[in-house]
Image (cartoon, rainbow, N blue to C red; front, top):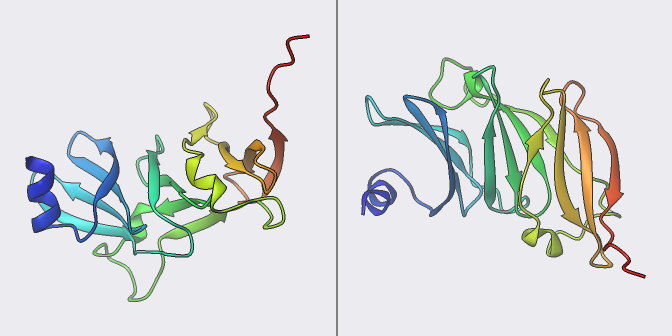
Length: 165
């Protein structure tokens, strides 16, 4: 299959999610936590994020409308905002990071292993706030909100089952 060919030729880890950045660029989130973008015109690959065992697999990627930013949801509950202009292979200083913000809830709230089942990431229409689910130590799901302007957590709200009484 074409994806198997891509893995063997370009990727060292399985692609778990894929999104179009624009009509010429596809972004992949990988099992090992790395994120890559493929230019379909030249078949060139650019690494956005390296493998990261501490944050888990890259399970969701969401390009923002400005075209130069990308949100990623990691399987252990952390979200990250990347500046694509600073991706590896772009004209950057060696060792510079493309991570703008690590969007994470306080560790006392998040159970990283239970959060592996919490997928999805969304932004408001103005792309100022990001929302994503996570699970706490009591197996209760939460929606967390962060500011994309400051990288700070705005708050979280538990998701409670509707009481049918």
